[in-house]
Every structure is written in structure tokens, then in C-alpha cells.
Amino acid sequence: MRLVVDANVVISALTSSGITRKVFLFNSLVKRFEFIVPELLMREVRKREESLIKEIGISKEEFDRVLVFLIMDIEFIPAKEFVISA
Image (cartoon, rainbow, N blue to C red; front, side, top):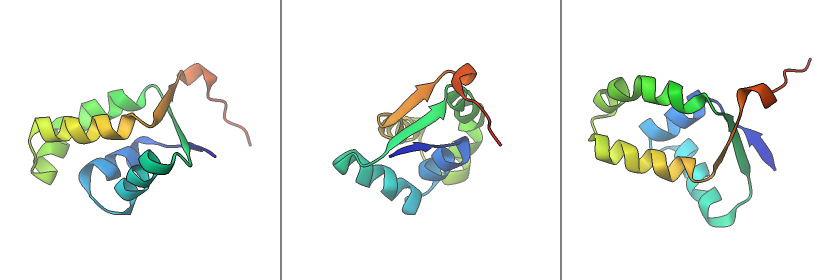
């Protein structure tokens, strides 16, 4: 199943070890979902990186480890390929 994930989902998984991160962990084991995101998502995450690190109280290295874990199961799609339909 393909799921479009936005920056809020990725940020939620970065900042909390709650259900959102658990879905990514589960998927890393069973490969049930194909997460797809616009390529601009990383720009949004990196733009907020410093404030997120302070907010959750982790090191940049730990932040990067969690981010790498999350993006391993994400397919980045060029923005021009996203079509908004009614």
C-alpha cells in the first residue's frame, strides 16, 4: 500500500517514540507500506532541525540517526509529479 507522508508525520516520528515512530519501525520489519513524500520534505525537516533538537533534548547525532532510520523506508518524489485532484 502506498501512503503519502507529509512533514508533520516525519517530524512526529522524529520527536516522539510514540505510535508514528512505531509504524515506521514495524514497516522496516514487514515492508507493508510504501511511504512516499515530496522531495521538499527534507528541506522542511532540516529547516526545523535546530529547534527540534532543542525541543526534544537530543544530540544532533542522535537526531540524524533517527532521521536516517526514517528515510530508509521513504521514497522521495519530485514535486512536479504530485498532482492535486479534487
